[in-house]
Image (cartoon, rainbow over all chains, first blue to last red; front, side, top):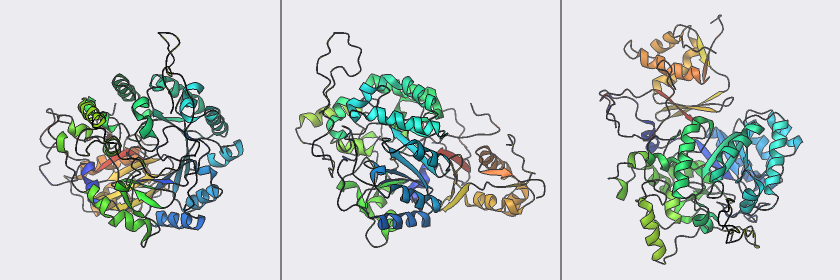
Amino acid sequence: MTVPLLPGPLPLVEHFERGLAAPICLTWELTYACNLSCVHCLSSSGRRDPRELTTAEAAALIDEFERMQVFYVNIGGGEPTVRPDFWDLVDYAVDRRVGVKFSTNGIKITPEVARRLAGSDYVDVQISLDGATQPVNDAVRGPGSYRTAMRAMRALADAGFVGFKLSVVVTRQNASQLDDFAALAAEYGAQLRLTRLRPAGRGASVWHELRPTREQQRAVYDWLISHGENVLTGDSFFHLGGYGQGLPGLNMCGAGRVVCLIDPVGDVYACPFAIHDSFLAGNVRSDGGFARVWRESELFATLRGPQSGGACTSCSAYDACRGGCMAAKFFTGLPLDGPDPECVLGHGEALLERAAASQVAPPRPSPDHSHRTGPVPVTIGKRPSRACDESPLAGFTAR
Amino acid sequence: MSTNFQLDSPWCLDERVAVRPEPFGALLYNYGNRRLSFLKDPTVLTVVRSLADHPTARSACESAGVSTQAMPAYERALSTLARSAMIRERDGRG
Amino acid sequence: MPDSATLEIEVQADVADTDEPLVAEELLVEEISIDGMCGVY
């Protein structure tokens, strides 16, 4: 670390330890209801929770965002567009100059809706897709989901909505399709976004089958480096900084420092991938609302304080990787002051094996709003029909 | 859009930019191009906010107390902001 | 590649760099993509 002779501005990362007046990026899950049942859903969504914020409460929250000068909010769920008041809430936010990017599987993005959205600087759309081809995608997101996403993208492109986001969670099964995703994004005038699979929500049950192999992880890193700022990542691969050159972004865990999550019942968590009591900071329905939780919660004060690298501090890569993702460690039963389970130097592997051998179950994600019929019951088959089966789905079974 | 930032031209904050003061300085977000800038010093914020009231960016800096030695750093800062369209040149009347 | 006149710096956690001078002037303005923060949908 370089040392300035004269006092001056600090490295950016150090400013966030002092706390911000408001989050820079805020994720708001509007509902746990969803028309899909993706196997890896980070919020275990499917069924609406009876205690979800009312329209009035949601509007009051947007009023708070306006007062706090939140630039924009990422709205997700579940599938946020299935809430009957969704479009009214988006208008309400935009009218108050609170920008909205909403994440959707595309189910409600008709040509008419797309045309309305295309005109506004304050609304951005993110389409979720986890396979560049139908079989790869639908194995994880369910039958018909690929077609729904394509239809939505066609509607947005035709409406002249340039630069909407095509957001992909990188898995073992789609890691070979990165060029295809880039082509898809280019074809529809979208911006590609690749994000890391965390063992969060239902993702915890399929993480070991879906997470990229070590070789794939390296290949993804190289691919991202070569694509620079053209491909977004939500800074979710900052743990790969251990390979050398850092990827674009803040390259640090933002939980409770620059980001947080508000869930459908008003609970405030440090981040969307850490939905668990251990990372619950408060509830927006309490006195002082969201602003008080952001500014005064004990959990956030702890996260904003100096962090111990613990077992990682003596590692040469620590400055780059910062010990990786808190949620990934938590839900795989690893200690938070140690290596990321996917540490690029392999320091997480031994810990994972030990955790598996110990027979002690890792923390379970909570709460679970999955559809009662369970996640997508697609079975691809355990054995490839030929020894050299090229299908990325060979041997994959979705539980 | 100017590719070479000129200290001695008139500048102003772009209309699409929201400014949020922070303990360390400020955050700027441009709703048009979705760029985010961190102003890591309160003086830079003062300069940026006062650009429209000064005939040149240089005089805005001087008025905010920027010394001659510090001026190159502020020129670099404003140049970065110009490149991401956070600030723009005013028309000749200023 | 950024040229020296107009620098757009991507913020990275510090990585040991033995070629850097002892005195480095921290930039007064830095840019991050609005999507450059971890913990977001």
